[in-house]
Image 1: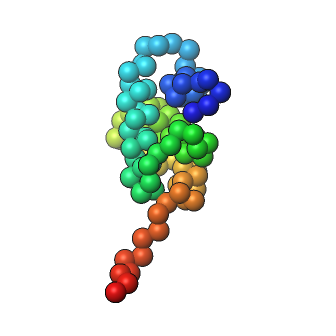
Image 2: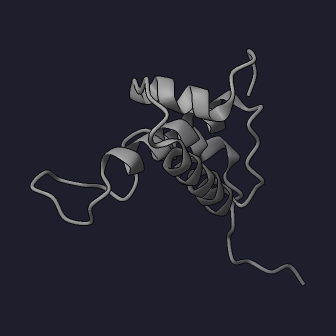
Length: 99
């Protein structure tokens, strides 16, 4: 991530948090988001890529704000827009084996 901002600073800005009380939780959520992105795309997460960074921030923010598995509101496994941000980085797997 660039501009001299740390990943946690960016995540706190995304969430409009001005305290340090949840920093350990935020680190955990961001790490989990980066792992999820790597697994989803089949590529290594890189913080230098603005689209991947945005997807990680959105996903970590969503998981931070929606900590319960059940709610009165409609929850999604992945919030709107993240899959679209990551589509260009996803390895295409066809199942076809050349031989």
